Image (cartoon, rainbow, N blue to C red; front, side):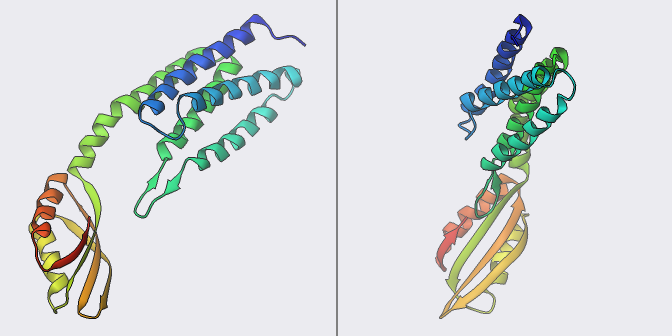
Length: 211
């Protein structure tokens, strides 16, 4: 069994596609960067080519289907949860689509693979600006305030949220000695958040403040 010149071209094309997507991930300092994405596209292309040669064209989908399973484990490895949000979903999606593009190149579907690559790059580069605009218009933050207890303490700060046109949901509250703490999930524009924070930082009744 020998590889043909077309197979070598497929390997080079997958290297090119993986490099373009991986460069964007590397530029943004993501966990799966330039080398990782290239290796994923190369591996997917090679597995697809081998599935045709080993299976002699009878059941290439058997090996190709296992690529999806393997990529699933890689994708899960870059997803992690912090205290308030889940990170790595975009990178996991990039790994998933990189494997699909590698399979497309390995199967000889060059046009659809390159067209999809262009779309992926537009999403990763272009949609970032839109995402920043949406985030500035609607931001979600967690606030935790600790201050000296009185009966109107938490209601006072919730009134401040409303005054700054922020929507909120109280997550928890607790009292220890003469101190009371409250946690809220607060939604609104970045500008309104900054105005509220400047007010709270000047509040001498607050002993601890996380935002």
